[in-house]
Amino acid sequence: MSKRFTRILVTLFVTLALLGGGVTLYGDNIRKLFGASASSLTGNHEAVASGSEGLQRKSMRTFGNNDAYGDSDTGQRASVPVAQAPAPSGAPQAINPRTDVREDALSTFAVDVDTASYTQFRRSVTEHQLPHPSNVRVEEWVNYFRYAIPAPRPGQGPFHVALEAAPSPFAERQHLLRVSLQGRHVAKAERKPTHLVFLVDTSGSMQGPDRLALVQKSVKLAVEGLNPHDTVAITTYAGGVSTVLEPTPAKERKRINAAIDALSAGGGTAMGDGLELAYRQAVRMAGSQRVSRVIVLTDGDTNLGRNQTVETMLGSIRRYVKEGVTLSTIGFGMGNYRDELMEKLANQGNGNCYYIDSEREAQRVFRDQLGGTLEVIAQDVKIQVEFDRTAVRAYRLLGYENRAIADADFRKDDVDAGEVGAGHTVTALYELDLTGEGDTVATVRVRAKKPGDSEAAEQRFVLNRNEVKASLDRASEDLRFAAAVASTADLLRGTLTTDERNFSRIHSLAADATHGQEDRVEFLTLLGKLRQLLAPRLASSSR
Image (tube, rainbow, N blue to C red; front, top):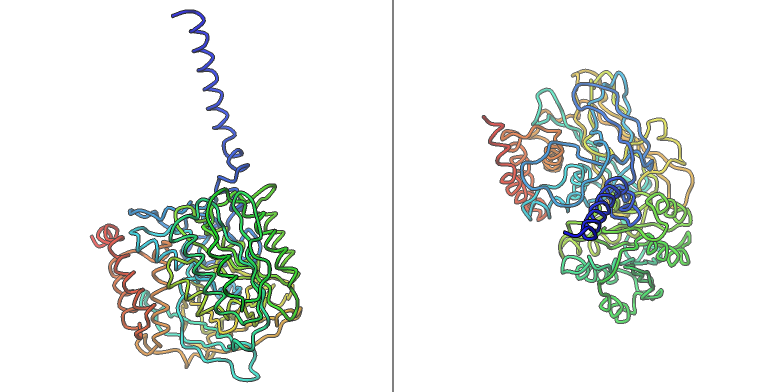
């Protein structure tokens, strides 16, 4: 071997070594520059660590603060495949602990009408995978289903709250409390004029029948549900951004559908730049007497765009919210979907986060529930439950970790909270340790603003001890079914012990409370598939 050839080989090996070291040392920064790392999408937020064993003071976080979004696995690792969405980074997000009423009698949270977490679970299990535990949000599972809640009476306010309590099937001497809120309905003819800007992800990853093709069907469904003089605009983002349809009256269906049909996928994913363009379109039509909303439709795979970070994008969204523009995020596809980012954007934009896994779900979101999405009846809606220290020993709120509000902020009207649309329902479940004494179990207060107002009004509802059901059999089907759904979510988060007895109780609860509703019957089918996926764990726990 010649000396010259030897020198070439040595130079090559040294160069490769330096390149390898550079990737090791600086690879995450390189990925962040091009938007490829999960941390560049979610931020590097610390979560509040808290155990779920024993009684303790609950953690106090304010909804809207980024630290409220813990990123990561909250439960045990599954022994079967987990859905291949990238796992969030950071410390495990705390699951609400059991709280001693003597230490803290107040539980405060912002409402949540999102349902993306449940729809992702359905798709994952259908494809023989478990959802990542960090993507399981109990409240979104419970609120996917409809419950029989009376509408508010004239003069009562925007909400009626139904309270119900009964013994728990999972622990002796423990009860379940259901707090359900029903918003007033608004007829289609009574809705405010609406301007929708659809921001469509047309990057290369959106190719496929469950992505762009399903987006196109979804947008058409939404347009069909608009009033004739409502307006629609369509913007897109891929490697660049563009407006493919200027504001157009909804009655010009042929022109709008032609723009929808012309959409095609290819290129990069500059979401941040696309959002800015869509907001500029929306803010032109914003006003106190008009709904102006941006609806993002994406598989969530994004590098954000030039000079964009999550924080700058959230800051931009906050500015536009103040100008009267709201935001909804709609997810499609699996594998590269950024669930935590989509939820964050929707929360910051005073909107909703949904996930579409089928044409039937598209009809549910864009046809059946469109009125609730468009017509907001109350803003910054907070719920505070005050437990009677004589009647209640301890409590635990199931879910709503991302929606926690400091108790002292309940009556601070400048503190951000959730929005409720026309006809929306919100349900929360608590586990209670009752003492058997006292007359009042809990007082529930709901505080909310009329759209555009700066001051909130408050409603008050009371659950007396003599109203607590003596047995679970005497409880409503709604309470039993909601308990089955919430317990399944808790099981996947690692909060409820995964064993055959618990699974049998969950199945029995759900089976006796389907009431012939299609979504509830489907949940039973999903339970059967989930049971098969968890079979190894169930078998080991029964030994």
